[in-house]
Image (cartoon, rainbow, N blue to C red; front, side, top):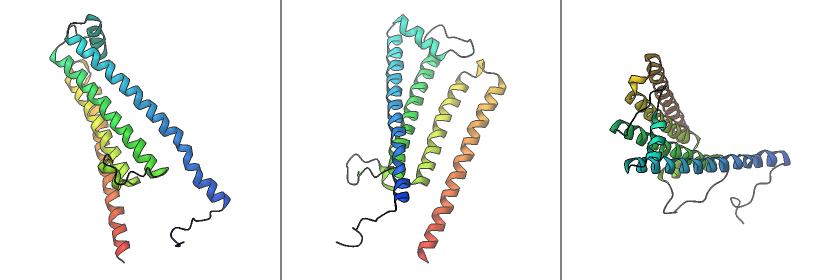
Amino acid sequence: MSKQNTPIKLSPLANLIFFSRWLQLPLYLGLILAQGVYVYHFWVELSDLIGAALGNQSALQHILDAVAVGGERPTKLTETTIMLVVLGLIDVVMISNLLIMVIIGGYETFVSRLGLEGHPDQPEWLSHVNASVLKVKLAMAIIGISSIHLLKTFINAAVYDPKTLIAQTGIHFTFLLSALAIAYCDQIVTKTQKETDTH
């Protein structure tokens, strides 16, 4: 048997510490359940939108309640109302994408290999995932979600006070700066690693 295939014998303490990574498994299973809740919420919202468009009054009332902000409630299904509902659906999809990245990427990085090499459905980003790449991708996903929320706010800008608009814009800008800082730090680490490997 080659030396590379010989299992490494760990001390009891090291073995316990290494095995503790499996404590994260219930967390990822919980996120899968949360994903199921988002799927259910998506189909409820979508069915209400379709029902409202077809003249179902109960579905219309649910849609109008869902887009009501600050006591301001639309009275009928308009282009703006439809746009707000669709943006809400996109928001659910983007959060769902974020959950998938955390579940699959986090499990692959911190718990155990999934063994997807060569699988036709393996996500492209998973082939080179590590903690740094995962942080950058999560930051970009959060920016996308924040952009959707900001767009929904500006569509309904008339019902928001200026302080709220400024605060949401500032928070979005902070997310952008944070993502740039994470990407820059990752670039420095990668560059340093390459220089170390060449020496």
